[in-house]
Amino acid sequence: MAVHERGGERREPARRDSGLRRRAALAAGALAATGLLSALVPAPDAHAAQARARAQVPAAAQAPAPATATATTAKSTPGALPAPTGPHAVGTVTRHLVDTARKDPWKPERGDRQVTISLFYPADHEESSAAPHMDPSAAAHFGSARGAGSFNYHVRPDAADWASTRTHARVDAPVARGSRSLPVVLYSAGLGDPRTWNTGLAEELASRGYVVVTVDHPYDSSEVRLASGELAESVLPSLAGAPVTEVDATIRRAVKARVDDTRFVLDTLGSAQWRRGLPRGLGDAMDLRHVGMAGQSAGGFTAAQALHDDRRLKAGINMDGQMDFPLPDSTGSNLSTVAREGVDRPFLLLGSDGPGAADNRASWASFRQHSRGRQTELTMAGAAHGTYTDGVSLLPALARQGALSEEELRQNIGTVRPERAVAATRAYVVAFFDRFLKGRDGRLLDGPSPRFPEMRFRDAPAS
Image (cartoon, rainbow, N blue to C red):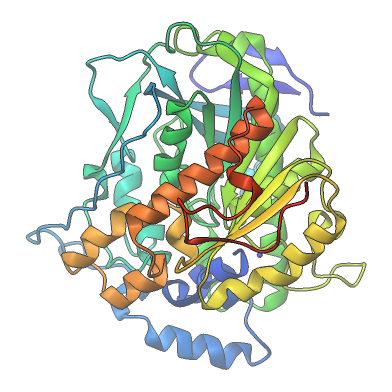
């Protein structure tokens, strides 16, 4: 297999050794109410349920708005991403990769699979301006009627100025002086979400001495700007009204593509030649002996499945993602192989407290039963599916400006106070990776903490 970075000349041989159900509402046009898989994968009265769901979605969310709809209308401004709290400033860089060993699984006629990644890392303080949260063209699509801002998070199409949000990271900043042996964490977003949709968490980890690699999955992610400048739009909205068998095949294809993307990114990170093209000092500072992965929703499923399939990953986190499929496979099970077989390395399950939380139980219970590594499961009281994303920080301001209703906001991020949700998520994610990638144990994972009363352990962690 060859690894090729689009726009460069470097080539080097490299080796290759469902929360999901609640996201399927994207294709059914009811994403706002249930999250993706439950509407793509309806109950036995599927068609009637889908019709009711579509009837409840405002017309503006079902069809693209007229081109002139926002010409004279001021857009609402999302909230700010919370600043990272670690001792380091944060740098970032984006790279467009091409896997010459694999055709695109969604559009094979387009040729080799392209994957876009961003890296966040501890950096020297610089006076350069902070990077945007989203590329302008991606931000425009994200907020349109066919983008995840509308379908996944209830924001009225073209009502929000998603391009106005800034990160706290400096583009191409040199790695922090003295950095060495920085553990690496890969991140995969929810089905239909872009890689940018947990930048706040990525920056927090980077500020605490990690290299975080956020991975976009073209034609699954809401939109991905490719190296050519072309925007690869998600194929998922086209599944509206599709039969369950087609949806099942799509979900399985999505998970396989995500895991394959993850393994390709690991291959690329392992290329010394490729790392030499990163900002000064970054390539040499990465410790590829200590690599973990986290994800939200389908990204959490991806993290678990990738850990199951690839031993280069040493620890993983699933934030509110199911690990099963709509229909049984040849074994008669809906469960994924990772849910049926578990993993033998540390894993953290972070769950929500909303009406859809029960969707996780079967796959999570099987996963824990069959896993042999250290397993911890917590639920955040008052959390909803989107609490574990940047939505918890960005959406409340939009609701105050009328870009979505207070009830829609509650469906997205629950009733937990946003600042508490951010603090708790950051604390447990950092504590987990500190323990299992850095060997630093602050004991936060040992049991309930008065610092975070909203976090409930499902049972006492094994000693």
